[in-house]
Image (cartoon, rainbow, N blue to C red; front, side):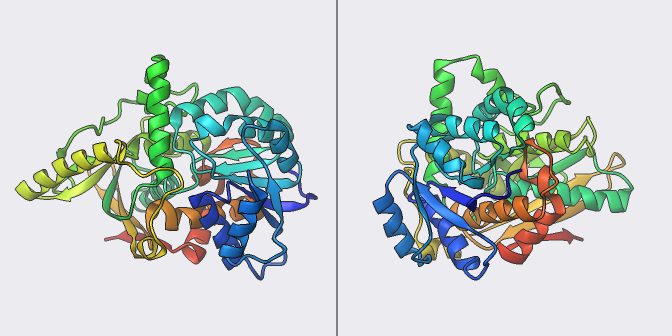
Length: 393
């Protein structure tokens, strides 16, 4: 890992909606941290200067011109950095050259990617180079999939304590999610659909729960594609639109950690909608809402909620680990902001700080944030990012 460079962190895409929030978080929460040298990067120095002023960053915060369509500018940017935070998506359209450059040069990289097909392509193409150069490449460091991946890890640690072993079955359930889907998430979904339409061979990757575990295929997983009544929780449940990426990352995390959950591990995610006829009706409403979120009225990249809306959002996730004899342990993960923006900007920032400061010995290669940083990341998120992790009785 490179340690004698000009900047610890460069926020690439700092003029975008989410990138600006990431830069604002670093400018605010690490203002007095004299050990952290960071910079803002984007296509326009003029726009970067306006963002720097708008977020109240120090007037001498460095600005770097870099553009995904100009590989030389990306090379010049990463040559100055220990780690690059990329918020420039959809990553399958704008991210490939940056990942390739970081993997080749030994520069750590983290992003907010929720695009499993592209992620698998990047792993296949660049893992060897990353391991040779010393680069740690960490995808999915926002709401997808940090709280889900760490929620599974946290409940399995409790299962280990109570049962004496991790559980072969974990259910991830969304109890509450107040906030808006990010325009970037909607754009990423559309880009994925467009890519699959052009190349039908990608359908198999998109549908495979083990798309991100090259060389390993686990047991059949619940499809999670339609409303169902959950006997364990006495509630109806509906499909969760982010399960497609989160479940893949949880299985990859299990593989990267050496299969502590077992090779027969079964994991799914759904939205809890309540018992009885009302719960069944609510589940159908969630299905309809999911379709709208990626339709023509979906938010556009660069759009997002107001500060008030971000701060009034929250999320509450339930994890149920079920032992072979039917015993259960439960845990909850909550966040105090709108998940797609307010919490995400805090999570990716803390992932970057954690990777550099708390996980210097994590080997090179492609990682999930949970597998790379585990308890150190949980502690940072609890201390700094408004998340809670607790066992429920």
